Image 1 (tube, rainbow, N blue to C red):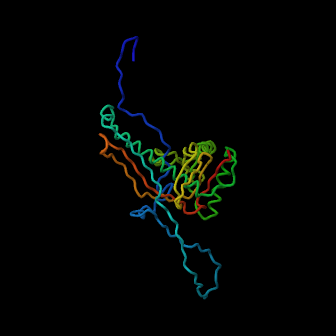
Image 2 (image 1 turned 90 degrees about the horizontal axis):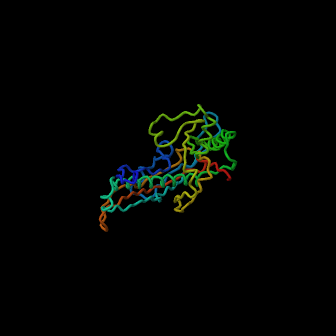
Image 3 (image 1 turned 30 degrees about the horizontal axis):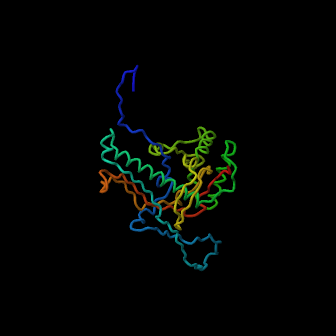
Length: 289
């Protein structure tokens, strides 16, 4: 660097510029259920009992005898078969030659990379196991209310609650234009910090920029098959969070001295399973183009 032909000092900043990642959209008890988390210990799969459905019956006259029915149930398998891994080699000679904590910086980056993949697989599960709506016309300011209510109606008729909407940036922005001051921001500072959320039409809206940019989100389903979903055509996913299950078997982050070179390995590993309890718990609104 020169000023008027005179060499001047150059300096490297110890502050690492941030890399940006997709929003943190999945939070237990808010956008997914982790109630089976405790059952994952020491197992590679969780089998969930579901009682056989029974319908309401007509009333009887007083002094009637009981009519006995048989008990029945089924099993919903949730396989812990999705592994996220990231490992970065940190040579000590490199770490000594930069003005920042190289190992810590790359470990933090690996956590972000794995968490992003973890969330992408969760969206792929919702998109694959939910019910795709027949309406493929694009959402506009004029029709967004009717198209959102159509999704809600579909879920409510199955006795579930439409309580979460994962919306693409385009859909979320259109909703903000239409809703105006009717949109109530969530007060929780942590939620605001980790994702754009708010309540409208009785549902929690989550701005999900993954839906706009991801064309090949993958996850291993409950049968062990790798599924690939194009999320870029999805305008919103509306679902009952109580029926969407994510279970983590292992979540590990470490700095490990290497035996093969003079340095450290920054490693992160997450092993998880995803399952939508019933296809009717979620509806997916796609556009044709």
